[in-house]
Length: 218
Length: 322
Image (cartoon, rainbow over all chains, first blue to last red; front, side, top):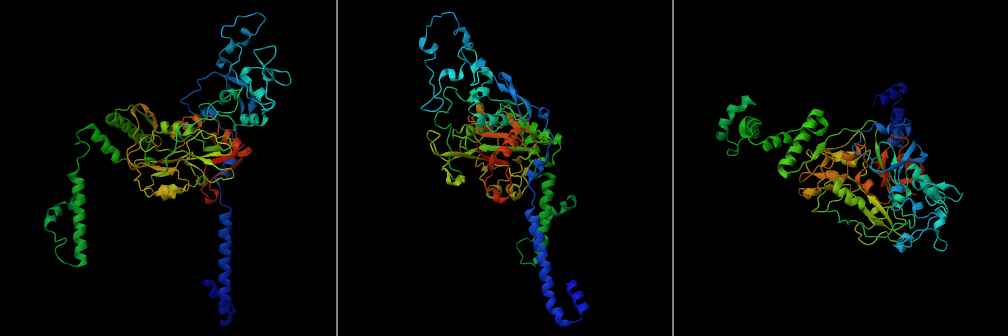
């Protein structure tokens, strides 16, 4: 209001006073509206704050109640945060070491079907051109796996073998978008091995009934 | 208050409703009656703490008059936790270990859900029910899994009540729960300030300050909150003993509850029960303020989206595809 009276006093003309006032008023309104709209569009997200954090978080500073009880081995590759551990595999293979049967000595087989691995159903790879045993297993050194470059691979580090075809999954597994951590989100990183979740001979999850069902909400 | 006390003797003779007196005299006599009533309250209708007979009465008395969790000092938090442990022992014969661990410094929790990986086994749901002492009678569940048609991204179009062999070809599965919005509308709706966002991003409920009005349930655009119509019924041997004041302690009747990212676990470095139970690795949980964390990897390298992002609630729960 004071602005309008000032304008009127300067011009000294009541007719201009009458015509200018609404225009100035509208201009002021417009400026306020633009300012308000600009304020809205630049609404801050917590993600800006999140992205601005570049300082490393010390995962070991978190007090832990539970520790990983399973056997683990140090992975031969690093993730974005450095070295990490994976669940060991060899101790979970019932009849490891394989060389105790697969050697030069002839052995007597009592439970033939099981001990000759005839119980393994191999459903890995394309249906028309599936994988065979020695696509992954080392043909001579039976305590190891072998990749396509002929490198010997330890059973505990099977991700090195799986990753040669499933490289996208391996990349995500290293980063953390595939697979999962064991027990803790904090502390030293321990993740599931490929074979903890997938049966290497038949890696697809089997169909089954869900663990429970949901009732309608109220 | 004490000066008002003699007036209570005159209370019986006050012409409260009998005379058709003026409005002024009516209000005056009403205020006198109110003062007399409050005087009676402070001077003897209810016995004081010292006069209370049983230990249980004493504990319940102290529980009734405790402060909002956010106004308590650590000593007061410890005291109420001890009282609740003792009360659980006395009334339900349960040996629980309750904590009130504060948020961790430099931690903001985030969650990601892989809709390519989830196959609808619902093991997350059973793990959540067991961990959080959810009511078995009404089958309360914080998590819902929807069987979705390809191309749909709104769970309300999906089937949330499937029970058949999963996964079904050409369907995908999408889980919902509390998304722990950074601008949570539920916390604004609460008339008693019984729900709020903790500094580590977890939206929590002080069950003892909740009055059960369910405004927060109406305000939540994600159906993230559940209401206790009765006292939760959990078989004694299935009760999770390790509890948190703001987390999985057994809720009283008539209170609001919700997913707390398993606050009793996550504040001790552990994964939430749903993440730990997931057989397919579809659930990723971690610290958003750690540039090397799994959740940050997902946000940086995957196609992510949040549900109803246009509402501006800023959930800390992302869906992603491989």
